[in-house]
Image (cartoon, rainbow, N blue to C red; front, side, top):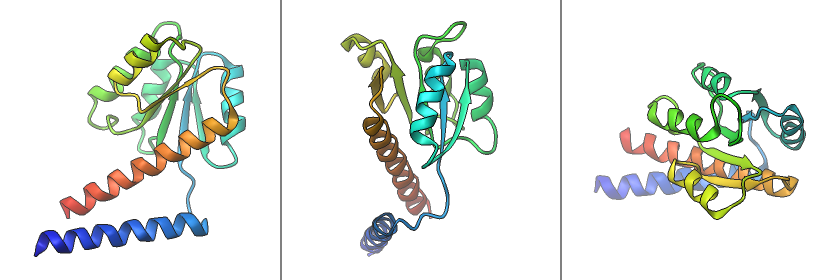
Length: 162
């Protein structure tokens, strides 16, 4: 009986989220952390996303790891691979090894577009991969999708725990 009640509650919550999305009644802006050593790349992505999201930026992997440790951690991270000192692969490994940051979705945004590069990104825990130069509609769609999925996963996990 409890299982049936939980399923009904989850379905009800999903319906409410869908209604909120359809009515565009979202009272908060999700946050995006853009990590790239090239300011021009940060500017392009921030320009695409800043009307819909709170955008933070880091020019290094080390700085990104400092930002995600704050109480206001980002809802999603757009991460370049090729950076000096600490590359994107090292950053995602640090993120996924830390229980506080492991659940933050990471999308690689990189000029590295070989199958091996994408495969390595997914194996390390990335949820998606966008090749540079980026397409604004693709960036917007993928960020929106992964933030929504992340919020749904957190909501379902909270329901199961409660």
